[in-house]
Image 1 (cartoon, helix red, strand yellow):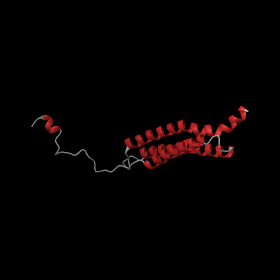
Image 2: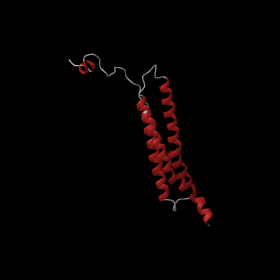
Image 3: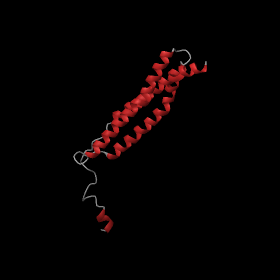
Image 4: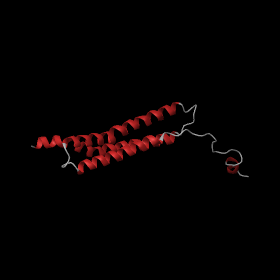
Length: 136
């Protein structure tokens, strides 16, 4: 038996742990993604109907689109961050999937960035009546 065989013997110890890890709440990520998608669709609808809708409709579509693409995803990202940070502090008592939490935090940040870009549609719809007023 060589030295490397004795070091990596499968009989001595298994590297898999029987301990279950607490997983980060993925529902918040999916709610954020859904919110950005719906907000983008509202913004697209507002841009398509920009010349045929009233000022009130444009304001409503712009406000709802902004809420869905920016405000809600940022709030959900903050909830993910707070949950991740508190789970890290409690990691001694309950085993927490740190890599999964970091990955979820990163992906939620990307969704917020995409939401910020897509919010341009809703912002355009919201400020279109004001721009038309200055153009006259």
